[in-house]
Image 1 (cartoon, helix red, strand yellow):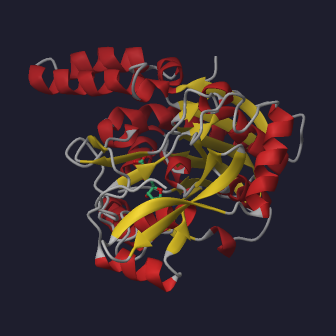
Image 2 (cartoon, protein in one colour):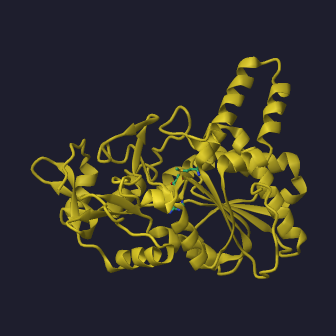
Image 3 (cartoon, helix red, strand yellow):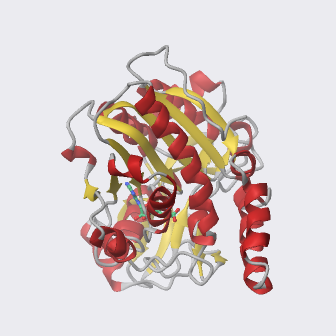
Length: 396
Ligand SMILES: C[S@@+](CC[C@H](N)C(=O)[O-])C[C@H]1O[C@@H](n2cnc3c(N)ncnc32)[C@H](O)[C@@H]1O
């Protein structure tokens, strides 16, 4: 039983007491991120960007949305030209943060393909009302111009009706995860308990659920890995993305023809589930710094966990998708013209050196191999006609 000092908050204490004093780590993460009043995203407190708590690629540089738009453009044209779909296409963004990426996509199409823009509906799937407010604000200009921008729930759509491109940038790493612990030769589920006297939270081992056991067993068998790994030390802990499969299955059911692009922090299974990675990948951020104690200031910090590359591919393929490719963000952006973009910036801003340097620095951070450049782009597809081949410039 590990106890950590905690700057506890009344709202969370009340919720845990209501549940009997112990909740699963999954429920803890869900509450601190998505509670409508107090969660980091639920309340809209999440502050992205270089002046906020952490940077995401779109918040780092507008050039990210520009380069990504080139890829989306290429995909949409192919879906149209191959007569896969004749009616209005959709660009769907899951977890749109403060709306920066969506705003960048609209800006791109407004300049580069107004004709196609008229035939595209932009949809955001965002469960957190606090973030929806921010997205509305950012996209106000485009809403006023009459662009087709909608906020929906996946459940609102009929099955097999989505045609187009689905995007999720740094969304899977924000979904609540289960944590599992190797203790006395057995696998346990991690829980979070409240010490009523001190008001402190601490980790506690709770019984593993059948659902979790089954999910781990099926991936273990298919990927030929051991969880916990052989020689895992006592207390070895890892994360399990129990919702990825459900999320992918739900998208697959709604999709008719299209492409899914997931961009996220990701690790190979052999590194994720190695004996030396004994405390998983869970990270909490605030003001651009890692917060060591994941119980600190609940609802005021981000909480995130890397995805496992092979598990995500497995979840996707067993949901029905085909894998088009997996590529590092640095390589994808270079293939989409990052070097040319750097050259354009230098020319465009030759009279404003400081702005040019700022843009250049931000672009280079997107491909930095020890930072955002190491993100993985996972490209999956569903086409009714399995013979259709789609070109993706980002995968060379
Ligand atoms: C780390 S932020 C990424 C924001 C944005 N995509 C970006 O790259 O700047 C995670 C986003 O996912 C949203 N989110 C959390 N759970 C979600 C879910 N189940 N479905 C869709 N979005 C979700 C959060 O509210 C937030 O907008």
